[in-house]
Image (cartoon, rainbow, N blue to C red; front, side, top):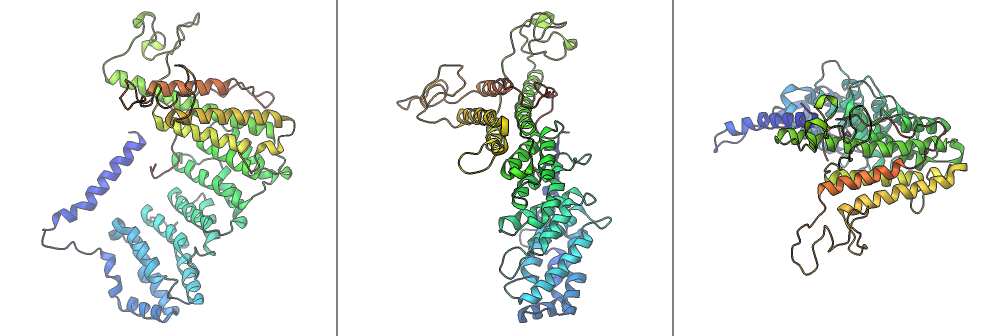
Length: 484
């Protein structure tokens, strides 16, 4: 079962389980409260709320929080509504508007100490572990901003390979919120660098890529000027063909933002890693599109054979898969197979990747970029950035054409203007084709790939291109939770 399908199945099962008690209730009866919602009836909790109104919490109140309220996050009976419970605790019992500064700091520390001790406890439910870690990131200071003392706790948890990956992702989510609020991450640079550049753990998959990508996004805030060690590690990530394309793109983005003369960046190696990552991303998407097209042709009962089983596109590989134009045993190649149909969202993602890589080499307007430390390859780097950006614009404009673009002939790399091949014709009448076909989008992707492959390698001794993307190796997503 493919992972996206698994996510859908889990979501549907969870929804059914969650809704079943609701449907079991007669229309004239209210749905019973969740078990945790009665915690406020406990005498000790009532005493806590009385102290909260007064603005101070004593040792007895803090004990009530850690022994009677926070453990509710681990109660299996509450697993369906942990997010609501977590927010109720944060807003009702850790309210910065009610508590004085000293009491708030003390109660936040008590909560964080309990949470960090429990998040890795043996046998804890993964959902409980995640919500416990999220609570640490939710803690606020008296000014209403994220609590600064939680920053090192979150960074340490995100870098702790012994913690469950979901809990580490929750810690990184809190750290991102701290960064967005303007809290300094400079003391956390070593931990972020470790998360960003560590070899992915076995089986971490998309969740591991997500964690590394978020760390790479925060790294320039923690380390505005790359150290030689950091620069070297980022170049290694760029050059690692086993890494996902999006992680390599994020590594390039971070390196470009952190480029400094003292970093001693191997510009040629960095540029070569960027070139290879750009090519790999386009290759993977074309391979995935070809596999999808092939699968649909089989499931639809039509094999779309060009010349029959004897010598057409299905010759070779035992007649089981197309060879895309290469006859068995070598010899003269047959006509190249047309580019596969590609979804518009794939083009948009590839346009973003190429634009991001271009900015890593030479940003538009203010910024650093690898060109700043390019040395002997600075001139080639500028040309390379222009090439990447040009291809990004072309792909983007296939989906979002400019109304004033000059009309191109059919088959040209750039899309035509509005009113042309894939826009509404002038006069308001519907044409035979109002938008680009998926086949045309696939050809645009193939053209971009050919253009980038023609760029000479930057690093001495580097192969012309990385090994071709394997069939069926679709580009991984960024988000372990499956959101867009």
